[in-house]
Amino acid sequence: MNLISDEIVEYLKEGSWIRDLFEKGSQLKQIYSDDKIFDFSLGNPIIEPPTNFKTKLKELVINSPGNVHGYLSNQGLIRAREKIASFLADLYKHHFYQESIVITTGASGALNVALKSILNPNDEVIVLVPYFVEYKYYIRNAQGIPIYCNLDNDFQIDCDEISSKITARTKAIIINTPHNPTGCVFSNKAISELANLLKEREEKYNSNIYMLFDAPYTQLTYDNIKNVNPFKSYHRVIYASSFSKDLGLAGERIGFIALDKDTPGHDLLISAFTFSNRILGFVNAPALMQHVLANTDNLIIQKDAYKKHRDLTMNILEEADFDFKKTQGGFFIFPKSPLEDDLEFCSLAADKFNILIVPGIGFGCPGHFRMSFSVKLETIEAARVPLKALKNYINE
Ligand code: PLP
Image (cartoon, rainbow, N blue to C red; front, side, top):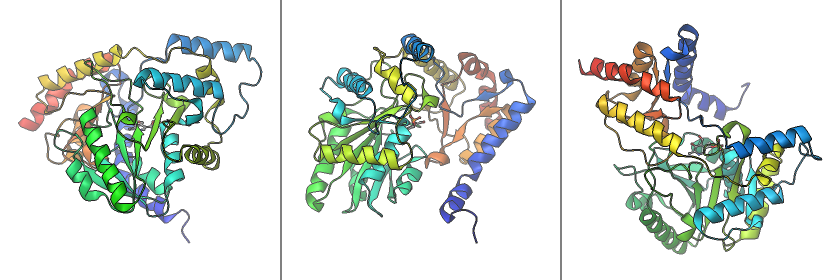
């Protein structure tokens, strides 16, 4: 008799290399001091949450005005939903209603709730490659099947490629922009072309295809680039996001799902999300965070700090002659691996130079590696010499 499920046995096998890499990282951290290890492996926010957020949090905890730690409605606190609706309205210059918001346990919670709510067994969900590694597990959690579809060479949406993957069983496509791991932001034109394709296929198959828009990096765009507004082009958008990255609240697990009020089946979808939030065991998103959100006015961050980190990282990678595309948004850069085998390259970087980076194969895209610039500026600067040495070592 197996002790655990066959599915989890398979996942653990699949993910063994990543555990080895993290194991390597922890071993290095036991041997060397922090300033001798260059850990670019995680997308953990390093900029503190806004001051008004912290002030409100402190006030709520110290004064404890009533029941800020108790259960909340499965959909979330109305005043927090109002804040999220007005945050989205500012962002997209379009009215959103608190009735169209469900507060979730991070963007991960939002994605799981959305997929659980819309998928029947063996429904297909298109995932663009390279991808955020968790998507396939979330889709399978809801008994769906991930269908992989490559982005083009510039890591942009390739509608011909997507067109060849849509079938009568396609229930959703996940769009993540700014994109993890490439740092690309998809254009309005690309999203609008995609929307037209989805509408055409909905008609052809008499089906409903959702655009599951995963946008936790939406405020983190650089060089005056703005993230795309999916609601403008498509009628069946499920917007899944969080304040994990832009407000620096990743560990607090606060996110949301939003719909446009005219989304077909709006009320039924919101009921389904609310119910799934409950039965997936989230019950309600963290209560204290919802109360703070409800009482905090400005949810906008200073993204200039992350831009500084991005610029320094690109400068160092350029100096060491790595081949990469400029990051337009988010936390990551996705350069080409100088060795064909990206796993070998990342192991070499860790073993010989104490540099921790993630191989592209983990995102379904071998031949690359992912580097997070959400690390201290000193760490990035200190990696200038070892990164150059690593590149020279390979060239020799
Ligand atoms: N989607 C993408 C593309 C991400 O990179 C992440 C986190 O790294 C998430 C979703 C999950 O975000 P959260 O921490 O809000 O659950």
